[in-house]
Length: 280
Image (cartoon, rainbow, N blue to C red):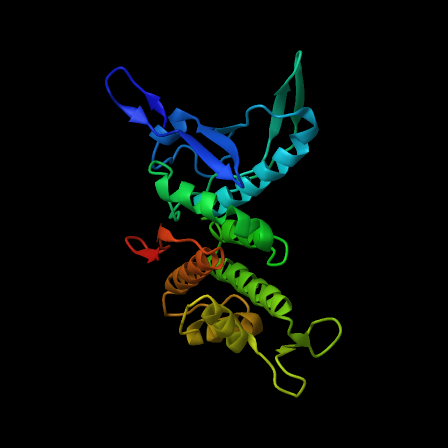
């Protein structure tokens, strides 16, 4: 769906999502889509998308705003940008309007889906929305998406990008441990969780491996663990090896983990250019 032009061309700027049986139609500014790869827009806060919901009773406005915020979270992940609710109009003998102060920029660089070809993106949101809502709070997924976004900012030193991803991994494994029911060795949860009542503990690497294996992933985490320890103890350091390759590896792991966690069945782009994963 989209806009058709007299010369026969068209732009797919109109997408309909079905969120638990309720339809929301997303319409993007055609100039934004035509400006691919969008160098003019990168790093800016722009209003480029409208969401249309038809036949809404006034009493259900907040209900749909919750859905729009959830949709915005998922679009933040899939576009590598901060997608935020900015305001709404509600026609009824005039109009009820609301506008909110909004922050966030467009940072799209290597997104899992291309907005010019939205079929897989639509499949992801339509099929995974329910799973996202169920896991959103327990796994703190909006925070995860924010850390991915902040680690993408091009002006940030790669060590800082990696530090953000290490915090993200710590958060993911922490919420996994809580969800699994593991008990921490102190009441404040500041020591490694234990899978049993004895002195056995799950350190960073062991718990992360278990978390990944739970969704069918097996990764070599030695370089991630070693650099994490070095960064914590030594601060900003120079290394001969390519730190961006390590950053790229972690982004690939996090991206695949989220898709598997939300039980996506389809194809997405890895963070590494030219690589894709299809989840059956």
